[in-house]
Image (cartoon, rainbow, N blue to C red; front, side):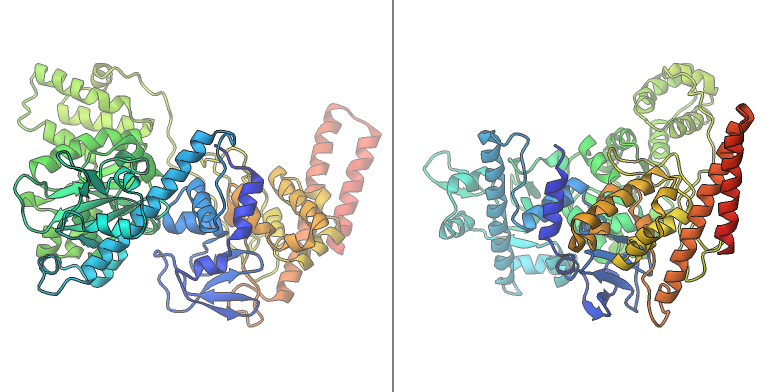
Length: 622
């Protein structure tokens, strides 16, 4: 369902950006705002350059240039979608999340049950954590942790705990917390006895790994046995429940999403310990599938953060088969999958202990396309017989059919044809494809923007080059194609009431030509007239409604000129923007009139052209 603007605004008003960001970096008062070190992992700095404005509810980093409001921070830092970030912040502020049908009592009850199950899982998580803390150093679980080299920081980062060997250790604790046992059973923490009344703990004598939702809530558990037990699996996962669907969750994403975004690459591993080992070694942009095959939902989760993935599987037969199963899933999700299988049936933890994290990072950086690995495996012992070519084409057909990126599909077709020693037209026909007929260009325009402490000359005003390939969400205001002068005018005008009042006094609005810039300024005028106190937070509200919110920001002024530009320079820049926007509008008006004059000569249009030129001359003299 789509949330209303009123709900989004209510959630934003209920959360203070300073309180939220203070959980991730230390902020200190600096002038009218607060400063701290940038919390984003892609930007390591020694001198604080991360600015937070409590008045405007905005953040901006002068180093890495990340900017936004409370929603964009959660999305960027935690890797959430906008919907997830909205629900996370609503829950944080104890604001009920609207349902599709407010009269649907059944849906309300289901949502309430989910919230209750998550609370029970939180109680269980704390119980397991405390049980681990209370174990002695010579306890088997402590010896196992030491053998795997897990540090206390890592244990705390993943909330790792320990389930007692007792059959009812957790059950008794839940009873003491007045948790209904029927709900604890529905959370898949305990199980009813078959031969006698009562329940028993599902997890016993295991190292416990809580599984978190994208909003950081415990929804399930995975447990590894400490000592091998007959007829028991090494890893035991929670069965699915109303809050946990295995095919929609990737383990570790709560801890690693920020690193996946910053490095623009996700490494997929198969289990909890593989991911934890990678994380502790410094390779933190990874996720784990919890021993199950990748699903289409997993692919969608990954695509929110990056299109670049490396499937890192164990070098045994099971790992190679898992790589084969993952290829069509990743390609169908419009990702760019690479693959790496480790030698001698090693898992990532074994490899790191033997060769080190740097050696593994080098292998990951040069990992080949997963398609190349798989076709190489399928062609082991290939002699090029006619029947082999047909069989291999049949095997490749379902792969080619699901690749949404036609450029990638055509390149893979060419790669396969060369390896199979067949012509490209033959292979294309054999797998049931027609030529895409698409002409590809390697030169893709992009958006770039810089703000400099200088006069508003052509070389110094930020420039925007529209990218027609960039997606724009439905309902968002597009800034693509706006002029460099209008963009800078927009950014400076929204910075303060004083700047906005200057904008209104100069009566520049009528000269704005770009519809997106005009819409934003119309919204600003409306807010300014209705509620002056709300105007300071206007930019923060607009961030969620603009296709490229970074274009709403310019550098903050400083009296020393250390970052941004001085207030006096800003005022001159604003006046220069007024002139340039008017000049551009008058120039375009004259050009349009000249075109119309050619089609339909008239003295009136000629006079309008002359007036536009006179106004330009007068403007430039001023």
